[in-house]
Structure formats: C-alpha cells, structure tokens
Figure 1 (tube, rainbow, N blue to C red):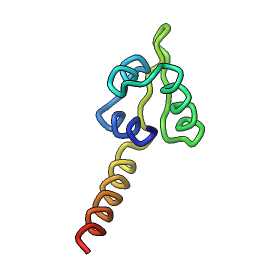
Figure 2: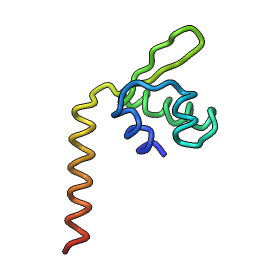
Figure 3: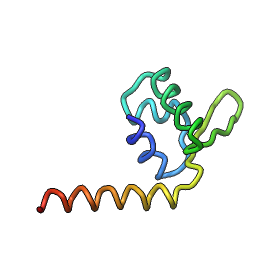
Length: 79
C-alpha cells in the first residue's frame, strides 16, 4: 500500500481524500500510511484549510529507485 501511495505521489501533490478515492482505501488507512512515510522523510505535508496534502520530499530519487527496482525485477524474470 505504501508503494502504491508513493507511485501516486510521483504524479504530483495529492490530498488524502484524493488518494482515498484513487487507492480505494479508507481515510484512516491512507493517513496512517502517510504518517509512516512522513516519519521516514519520504513525504511532506502541507495544510490548506482543513485539507492535508502530501508530496514526495525527493521525487527524482524515488523515481530512480523505483525504476531500478522494476528493472531488476524484470531481469530476474528473464533469467
């Protein structure tokens, strides 16, 4: 689930309610995962009124890591 959240945030900043709809998860579940990612300094939060919106701290690094992982995973399947 956290990986899905990170991949969603690669597209840009999202509010909890938007991620809730995209990922088909309850708000409490999304918020719990986001708090864990925030504690690990992977995401950051901005507050706009009553909305909490999240974005990746370093999207370039995250995109590179995900590409590397997917490349390694596809190489394992071809061996």
